[in-house]
Length: 126
Image (cartoon, rainbow, N blue to C red):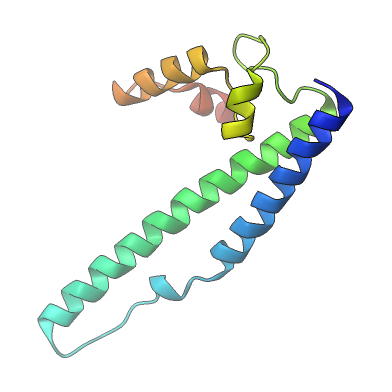
């Protein structure tokens, strides 16, 4: 990967990080609202659960983006963290924070669907 390509991905990652930080700071959707009406209580609880899931998803994505920015500075960006093969440029264009090549990502997704430890879990515990 050329220095120019790396810088392009780094700018994309930094922009995504800034976007996610703006979204995550807004936590108004998870506040508990009390209502005298039971139906309103259920609706508020459902909306709160959705807001929590979105916050959780965005927080996980932010961790992946930050990890990719670290890899961009230590020279390992664009290399699969499992098999150490180059990640295809098309994959990086689509998912700049990708830590795994397509093959390894599919294996990790399959393992996760089966309830087994994924590569991401292995990385966290390492």
